[in-house]
Amino acid sequence: MKKEKAMRKKTELQKIDIEEQFKKLEDLIHSSNTFFMACHINPDGDTIGSMLTLWSVLRRMGKKVTMFSQDPVPANLNFLPNTCHIVNKLPRRRFDVGIMLDFSSPMRGGNIKSVLKKCKTTACIDHHKTADNHADINIVEPTASSTAEIVFRLLYGMKAAINKREATYLYVGMVTDTGRFMYQATSTRTMETAAQLMATGFKFYRINEAIFTSKPKEHLKILGRALESMEIKAGGKLAVMSVTLEDFKTFGANPEHTEGIINYGLMPYSVQVVIMFREEEDRINVTFRSKGLVDVALVAKNFGGGGHKQASGCKMAVPLKEAQEKVTEYVLAKIDTAIKKKNAAKKAKTETKAIKTE
Ligand SMILES: [Mn+2]
Image 1 (cartoon, rainbow, N blue to C red):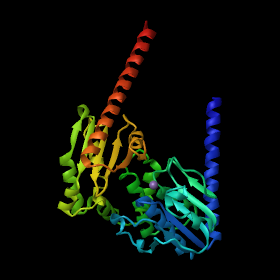
Image 2 (tube, rainbow, N blue to C red):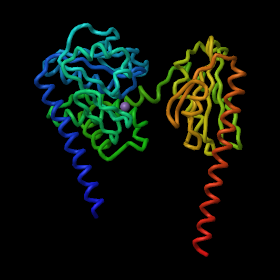
Image 3 (tube, rainbow, N blue to C red):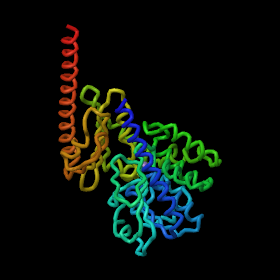
Image 4 (spheres, helix red, strand yellow):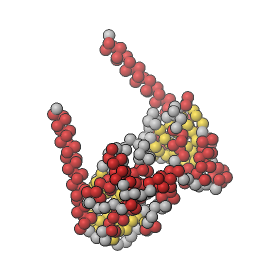
């Protein structure tokens, strides 16, 4: 009971805190004139969609807004109107407000630190668990499906009417970050927000088509090659895929065309880990995916790379065959250890159970 009360108090405190942050940003938007906005490096639909939305709303309010992205907007998002206004050169001027969208540490935005220093106030809107509250105003909600969902809440609170185009931007952010409303982070609030966006009447099916069901033919050809190359090892637990320089040459494809292909390796029911090798001119790009049995962040680290427990990567300056052998052998050993550990834990559990029933 006591615990419950404390828990409730804690969530209430968090709630008050985040509401306060929303209010602070709202007031700041009203009282400021010039804004700098940045999306993260290797931008995705969420960071771009969130930035375009705020840019559009603030401009309608008569504000001056500069949008910055260090990396180019990915080809599958180029259909979005106004991406041409995103600059990749750091502005020199001063701003009233600097806003980081979908990231919280300036590093993730590229070289923006110098610009943020020249902003009177900084803010961050993010939904990553790892977010650090570096900015003056931090609206961080790890339970939100996407930054776009949080931006919607901000605008809703501000009573800013969202037009069709802005609804499109926000929808792009949500539908991409949730994998078409498929991932765990999709909540009732996500669906309610999407419904409110749809009510503006934008053609969501055209967006889905543009993002999910249209691909360059080079991507499909490389996908075919990668699937063909798939080898299943460790009694079905490991899938290994490779794409060679020769494949790229044959289809006139480039590394960008391999985007997302590794995820196909996780599709077989029994597979726990996927390794994908991509041959480049002077090195081998290796990526990993895991359903959880093996921590692939540690695997990548062992070869000089890094990442997350379930998605990681590294680069190796050795011939393809050598990389394939070394990495596969290492992962096979990791799978073996993980299974042995799992079995030992299972055995210990049944034994304690047996003792208890005795
Ligand atoms: Mn995001």
